[in-house]
Length: 160
Image (cartoon, rainbow, N blue to C red; front, side, top):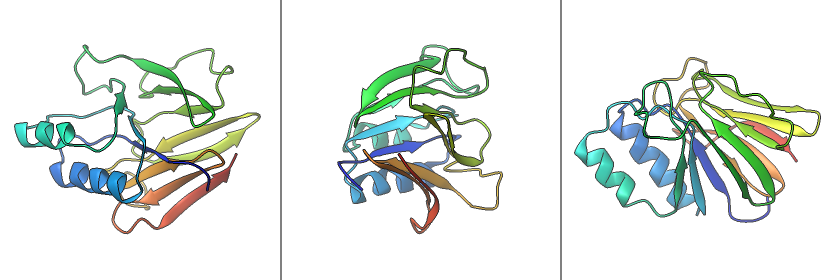
């Protein structure tokens, strides 16, 4: 695993312990950037303070439970990846210009390589709908991992 990782998470839905666990993982893995794929839900003032005290920059998109003030999608280049991130409740066309497409919304983790692109859904940090439990992802220069939030055990792994 090369470089400082990007931590990717989604679907917090107002769950303070889940947010705290993600922020701890961000510190423990020394993430250089956090990507949030939507659905903060109802953030109380304590959760907003937790976010202000994070250890790395945060890029986010709007989920179907979020304020319209947040962007629907983000395009960025980081760690050598051309990244498109959107929540997934709306389909975006023109994904072929990216080598990493990140979504949330389904509450199920997904890590699939299709052609030259990798499709990542980190799963839900608070309300998973699969048997893997709460999860998040780490994106390195050469590899992507989906990890359980409870013990950081590897659920899925994909080489670049």
